[in-house]
Length: 456
Image 1 (spheres, rainbow, N blue to C red):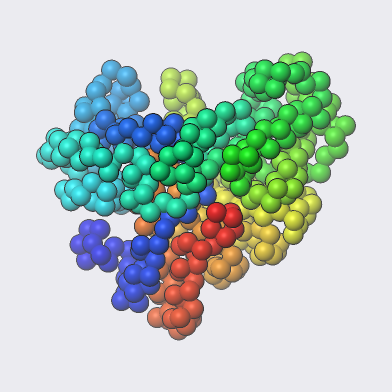
Image 2 (image 1 turned 60 degrees about the horizontal axis):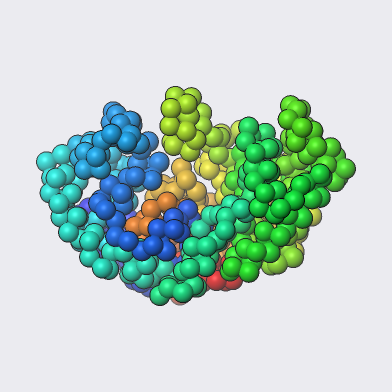
């Protein structure tokens, strides 16, 4: 088997046959971090670094591990060509990490470049890619068409004007890109900038919030606005899924205390966040939206990165001791059978808990794809095998790219589909799954399931 050949990640003829059924299916991507402005402007990438490294903390982290200086990752002095050549010099040392496969997949599938990235040919790949990236079909909207992206949902703050989403409705890809309601900043009362953010909401609405009910009303108005612009889901990134049952009176007391700039007790923070999570659940349930809960990211643990570069630059980790069941139990019971919830876990050790939760709560709670540190052939395989033994694979939510890079939509979905087909193909060969049902399953999870669940 050659690197990234037709049998990449496929260990049998049965797996290969299954992949033939799903290889060319359209992509439905209900969660990503698309730059909607860039898609709307539809300009060509300036170079291969902008396309592959400029916004991707996955890339920054592995290059740091191999000793690439920060100046050649996030610095402003080095040129993009210098940054790309720094990547190329150490890229062979990344073999075994999924980033090595993703970037080569991007080059091979989208740019038609088969060279293995290394110091000796880094300049050649830079020059070759420059010519390719300037072609008309390499502009963002054309790339989405080329990758057969049928539907995709970006990640958007409630105060976002959604002007670029609106502009795209007059473009050749009208109806493809939808917003997602991500109200984390309104919920994260422990953050230093929480009061400032509430002030931004007040300024946008032209009012003053004297109570938590005022805040909920303002967020409801933004929720309605997102719905008018095609939104079908909310998304919530939490370290711990606080969803305890809390009264409005208690939440209001915390809100007023926080607005006065006073320090909160841990129980007050948990109470406020729980109340807000329930409020967002009610908004979603009323509209038939999907409620996505991303659990377990411990943010910015490396102080030097946070202090010199800022948040979300590669200092986030998972924690296998994060409590999930007790905090989220009240929430899941409140919305049992009246809200579609998708649970994602950053830590591989939490997959067992989430699979059991989704099993216990029937059709209304689904397990999301292997997320972030699990987003690799190893993590995907382990998750799929475990779901099949505990929950029901047909109820998995399907794949999301979670990507900040346009080119990755194709490569990450290809990786998932290949792993899925190999897992199911192995079960067919072991006599666990009849081949016709295996064929039905891989098509369902690759395309039909996320389309149906999110109403896309």
